[in-house]
Length: 171
Image 1: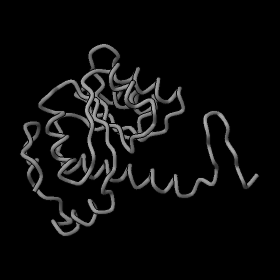
Image 2 (image 1 turned 180 degrees about the vertical axis):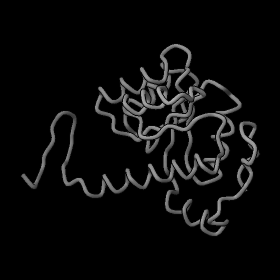
Image 3 (image 1 turned 135 degrees about the horizontal axis):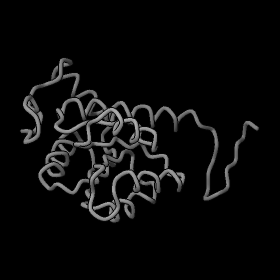
Image 4 (image 1 turned 90 degrees about the vertical axis):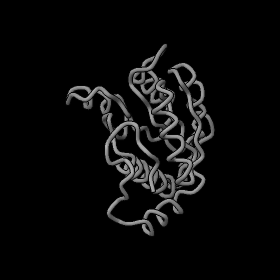
C-alpha cells in the first residue's frame, strides 16, 4: 500500500500490476540512493516515506544550494528536483549539474505545469518531468524506469573515467 498522499486523490491506490509485481520491481532497485531536493516539508516527507518503504535510501535537501552541494559528487542514483526552490532555483541546479558532467538521472517534480515549463525543464537536462499534484504510483513507476535506463547505460559503457581522464578500451 502506498503512503497516504496529501497531494493527490488516489495516492493510496495500488498499481495495476498488483502487490506481487510491485514487490518484484522494488526488489530490483533495493538500496538505490535517491536525493530529494524539495523545499515543501510535507511533499519531501511524503516522498521520503514512500521511497524508503520501497527499499530506497533517501536523502533530502530543502534548498537549491544544499541540493547542488549534495548532488555534485555524483553519488546518487536518482535526483528528484523541484523547480521553485529558495536560493538557487531548480533549473539552475540542473544546469550546474550537467555543466559539471554529472549524468545522474533527474526527475523534475513541479507545480509549474504549462507545456513551455515542461519543455524548458527537459531541455535543461532533466530526464523526466512530473507535475504536482501527482500520484505516488506514477512517480514510483517513472523513478523505476529512470533507474532501469541508468543501470543499462552503465552496464553497456566500456569506458573508464577518472576525473577528466576517459579510457575507452574499444578505440
